[in-house]
Length: 243
Image (cartoon, rainbow, N blue to C red; front, side, top):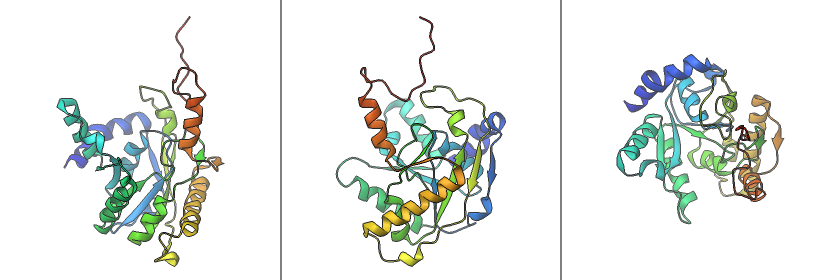
């Protein structure tokens, strides 16, 4: 009910009005059954436009902290994130990766459509960065296809460092499903998981037209932040105040 309310009554109409989003290749998404949607990640709004345009409900893994803040604000956040298909995962401690993996495999076992950002974080500059192999292991453990998704234009709606969203056309391209059944039972093999992840990232590069960078986005962000003397976000928009 919350998902339907967010998609069709509250946020959905506003996004459609101001950004005129379009989708291409929606027929590649199965009408039922489990699959992983592996998307590039340009902006926070990716997680709003993708569920808006895809006919099926998409489930995303989200930080548990989004659901545990006390008070009225915390309750509103919890309702909102639940409404857009987010499922909380505890990412603290040494077992965080395993907890996320177990949750993902469980959701796929229930026949869900799971949304994943293989880069692990938003792109700091619009380029496509090296994917993390968790998506490959999820696909192998759950024995499901991976469907590449390219978000285009969301970084113009929600530029890095911006506080307000801006009207701009958004386009979503869905690629053909990637079948990795030839690697069945080979989860845990680092070479296989890296090969699969690279194949997914190549498909994303082809769909999105982004320049590929063979580095992890998180590492690039950390180095950039360390280079800024006062600790400000190195990728924020420049200050336009006079003086």
